[in-house]
Length: 274
Image (cartoon, rainbow, N blue to C red; front, side, top):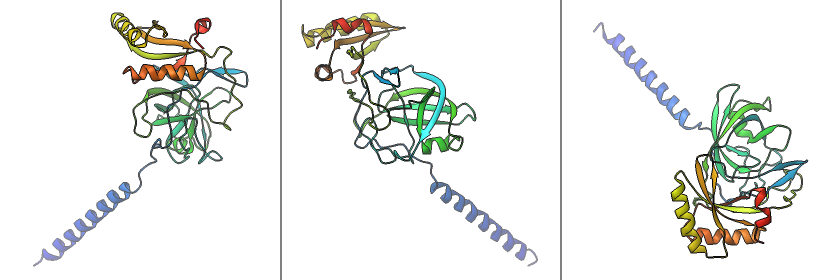
């Protein structure tokens, strides 16, 4: 048959193309990018106000956090060391250090110089150099395209609190990682509040305040506080980690499982319970 050789050639070409496509699919499956840390060994921390090289930092939960500034990255010699919340730093995973956000949490980081963006797990404190706002793992810097230049202008947006060891959020207060910074100096007041919940309807906030006051009794001060369009329900202020932690456990036991510690306003220092 005159058409047989041509048909055989066509079949062989189709087989070659099929083999090539399968090889590309298998290659793509075997070259996944770096993942995020599992959170093994870590726990939730916010932290008291601290001072580094004359600059004060005030850890706080800010669901509307968004900032533009300079990002740097770190790898060796911190690879394998504990992060500020007790996780293990792996330079090959997608993580970041931030001076004030809750640990651990997720942020979106966008490189404003090339448009690349990543979602990173924040599980460490830093950076404390110049005007830098975030310190990325080596893998994150590579994925965002600035590993070799060292610095990049980025936008950082808070997304949500992250689970730790698969457990839901239960924030506690803690210090930053030794060795990544100078010694921490506590705020002269150091008063802490418990942020219980935030409501768009002030009446709901007042109802929650009254209910929690009944549950905690007279030895706790439950109050509401306006913040933009929201009304926060807070307990405190308290002086000392032990007192604040004990009060937090009582609030969580009252079924406010997302409550966390946050620095109190300066005006509350004279009212703080020790």
